[in-house]
Length: 260
Image (cartoon, rainbow, N blue to C red; front, top):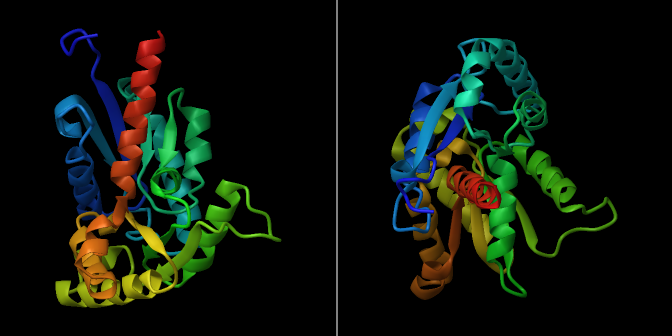
């Protein structure tokens, strides 16, 4: 099927917090994602965005924020009813075990994926035998929340643990901090968290565990050079959940188009 006859996919990037700055950063990251056919996502996919209203938390930093943001978005969905046929997939752009993913799956006929789940699938697919992956994130709350979420997603029960998952390292920042605090402070705290993760095992893949971290790959790569040296740092995979989710949505859409 040639490009002229192929339908263009339309993805809704849904930010469940109320930060427009964070939405803009994630949209920019999504649009720069290569699709594997020599095009960026912006050239082959329509990216629609939606930011929760000011009634939602400006930054999702704990369980209460997850629940509050879910409630706000669900209350605003009726207004989006007329537009939902304009989307082929929804990307829930919050790095958490977010309750919006199953809730929106009941409301929307197409695929709904969170950047947390997409990042796990991507990281696991990149590893070779003996290698591990881990998450660098924001506050302390996320260490247990995300670790438990990974175990649940991978089907690891309380008696065991995935030998491929090295764990979660927190920086002490919030999602909103990436757009408000001085860049040097962000670099220092993110570097320390990355260093701790890299020194914890045979890490071949680092997942950026916050949508607000889009564009900060260079800090992680630079820290990896200090810990692992130039060569190994150059081989380190760094996963941006927004890009990972966008790629998975595109692949699923293309498979559906081919099978029709």
